[in-house]
Amino acid sequence: MTELVSDNAEVTVLLVDDNPQNLKVLYETLKDKGYRLLIANEGEKALDLAHRHRPEVILLDIMMPEMDGYEVCERLKADPETSDCAVVFLSALDDLQAKVKGFNLGGADYISKPFQSQEVIARVRTHARVIRLERELQARNRELQGDQTRILNAIDEGIYGLDEAGIIEFANPAAAAIMGCPVEDLVGRNFFDLHFSTASAARDNLPVMATCRQGVAENQRNIRMLRADGSGFPAEYRSTPKLEDDELHGAVVVFWDITVELQNEQALEDAQALVQEQRDQLAHTSRLTTMGEMAAGFAHEVNQPLTAITNYARVSKRMIAGETPDLDLLRETLDKIEAQSHRASEIIRRIRRFVKKPATGKEVLSVSVLLEDTRQFAEVDMRNNEGGIQLDVAEDLPEVAADPIQVQQVALNLIRNALESSRAAAASEPVRVTASRCGDKCVRVAVVDHGVGVPEEAEEKLFHPFFTTKDDGMGIGLATCRSLIQAQGGDIGYERPEAGGACFFFTLPVAGVEGQPCTEEPA
Image 1 (cartoon, rainbow, N blue to C red):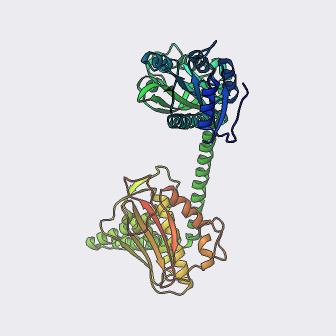
Image 2: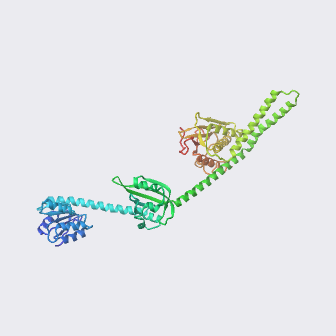
Image 3: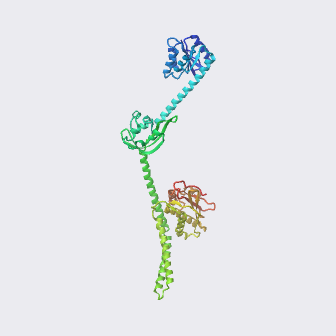
């Protein structure tokens, strides 16, 4: 019998019956419903049409000669191309046994003869919709599986799918490349035997073991794994449990060779150590340069107590040479010699402490003591500045964690710049140094002057290396200050006061909170 096809080809329905009258009734019932209709009057023809066109619905008569509907259904379900078709049996047999047999063979529904048109239309519409949705879902799943395969094949990290015993069920090409063998040689192997020594005394604690057995996710770095040839390599891996309906079915392992990564990290650490060494050397050179600039002032400061000591010693000698020396006056004179020697010693102590290279690193410091020491150290420059230095430290200021020599170098540099700027502007107001809380994690130190200020166009470049607003400057002072403060875990910056001049500030972490950001604005 020839094949008849309607105009609408969206859903295909195959009509199978050996009775031409029944086929005509079915065709007339469905022809205007938008289906693509196929007609067969015997089993072999039905199987051929179904295999070529994959209809969504097959209306199948049971009682046919040579090959009955049951055999046709059985063969349809055995063929992967037609196994998903919805088979609706048509039969005058209305007993329960016939229906059960049809359902057991894979039938989707049953319509008794003589059938009603509305019933046929409703059953076909329902099953056509279900099959179409199932096929769309299957197509989407195949598309997703294809996308997943392409993604897994494109990933540089090795990926394994393991069962509960650690048997490799899946391996991507990257895993094969890392292992140095084909994917098919990996699948079926035991992950633990393949990648770790079987003689390990701690076999129960091997990486990924807890994920496979207990569903515990893992992430470890620098784990030594073995390749197929027995050679080892450092690896990082992440393993996650493979769950289906909350039941553990193994693990998914993502791993990669970190040999080059570790080499790069070591090279980076070496470079950072070299940079830090150069920074320390630059800071030390900067301190020596500062000492050179302040040498004349220090010579004057030291010369004053030395001169006083000389004069007091001469007076003492004259008193001793007298017939009746005044012992009380002599004792007072010797006390003055001792005081002046302490004064000279203190000046030299400050110089030696300032110019030496830091050896102990960060300490717990009192900001008020450190700034007072710095203020006294800056008195050499203050002699030529009428306003002097005013120190304001907030009460109950917490201690900070920092390198005292480097912090003093920054504070001294900012104070000397402020003194120089004030002197250039002939300002009589003192340079003001303040220390206050800055949130819960920081202490903020600010140096404010009434000097010539900073040009607006220079603000963004103040802390850049080799940038300077001074005619004879080298541009390394503020850049060095930034490096030193950042090494303490703090921040440094500039603000333009409304009253003119300049305000440079830096922050230091409160002792006990090192490692946390210290860039907050003052409270």
